[in-house]
Image 1: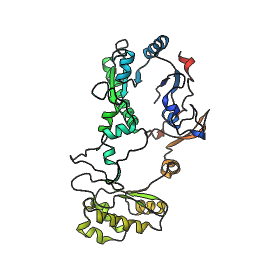
Image 2: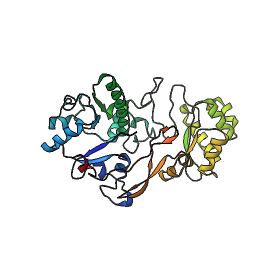
Image 3: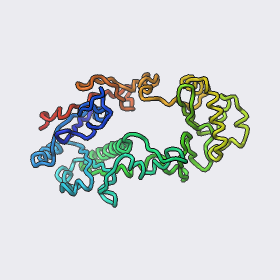
Image 4: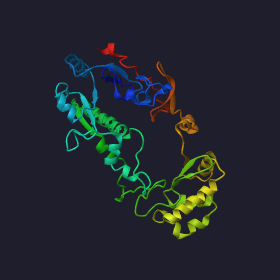
Length: 355
C-alpha cells in the first residue's frame, strides 16, 4: 500500500525465521527460508543490536522518524532490559507502538513461553480438530502469529485514523492467546452451542444439526470435501446421486446424531465416485448441480488451479539467492488490479542506508 517497512534484525544471524525451513533449493541458508521469504516481501533489512548503548541510540533515532513501531517484547524481556510501556511513546507522542506477545504483558501466563501448538491448545482450537475417538490435532503452521498480525494491522489503521484527529499516537497491545479465543465460531458458535471434534465431517453448528453429506471422502485419485448447510443442498446432493429416497426418509434428516447412517451416506457417495477423478466430480457437482464441493489440493496443485491463475493470485519474484519462486499476492483487488510485491531483503541489505 506504499508504506516503507524496515525490519530491524539482531546480528549476526538476523530474524529467527531465517533459520526455519523448508529452504528453497534444498540448501539451509539464512537467505533461503521460505518462511522468511514469504513473510518479508517488500521490506528492508537493517542489522541493529539495540541492546548496546550505540544500538539503543540508533533505535531511538529510527523510531523518531517512524509512524508505527512493531515489537514483540514480552513481560520477561521488558523486565530484563528495563524497557517499560512508555519508553518510546513518552518521547514520541505521535508514535503508534504495537506490542505483540503470546500472552500479553500482564496476567499469570505473561512470563511463560509459547509456540503455535500452545496457542491452538489454549484457544480451544485443538479440542475441535480431529477424530472424536482419537487425539486432538493442530493446524500446521504459524496461524496464531498470522492472525494476531492481521489484528495488529487493523488496530494500527484505527490508531492512525485516531491520530489524524487528536495528533496523539498510542501503545497497542495484542496477544496470540486472546486472538485464538476470538477466532470466528471457535470454540463457541453463534447460537451458544459448543463445537466438538468431528473427524472428516463438518461439525454441527447448532442443536438443529447439519444436513448429511458434509464430509471429506475418497474419489479415484484423491479426496474431495462435500459441504452442507441447508436442506436444499442435501436434496440436490441426493438428486446428483440418483437417491431421492434418502431425503424422503426422515431418518436421514440429521446424520450428526446417527453415526451409522452417516457412514452409510459416505459409502453411497464414495461408490458414486469410485470411477471418477477429483476434477470430474468437482466439475459435475459444482457446475451442473451447484453443490459446495471441492478437491483436496496439494500445494503444487493450488499454484496451478485455474481459478487462482485466472485471478493472477500468485506472482513470480526473482531473488538474488534463491532465484524465481511463486508468491501469493495480497487478496484485495484495487480497481481490478493486484498489489504487486518486491522481493524479501538480504540480511542487513539496507543497514548502510539508515545507520
